[in-house]
Image (cartoon, rainbow, N blue to C red; front, top):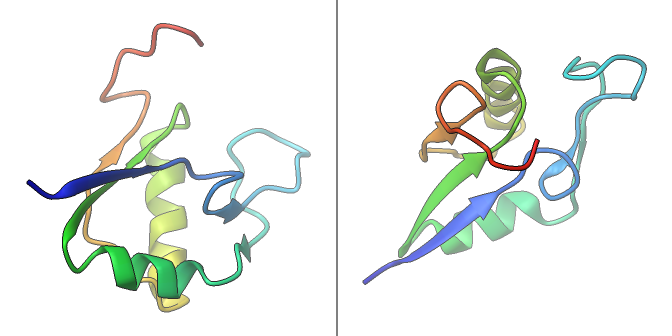
Length: 87
């Protein structure tokens, strides 16, 4: 059975907002070695992004990551997709 890796957008994958407004994609600071790590684990694992952020925000970040060389092919689970117990 393959392993499942779940990535949180901000803090784990990188920083995408300067903090002036929540869920505003105005900064891009990818964690060092993120591209290599995702390439390595995607060979034999399942990956997903889980976030309390709006789906449009998450999709814009994934598009930016793709432009930076991160080959993302997992699902994006946002607050529209999942009922979070502890908001």
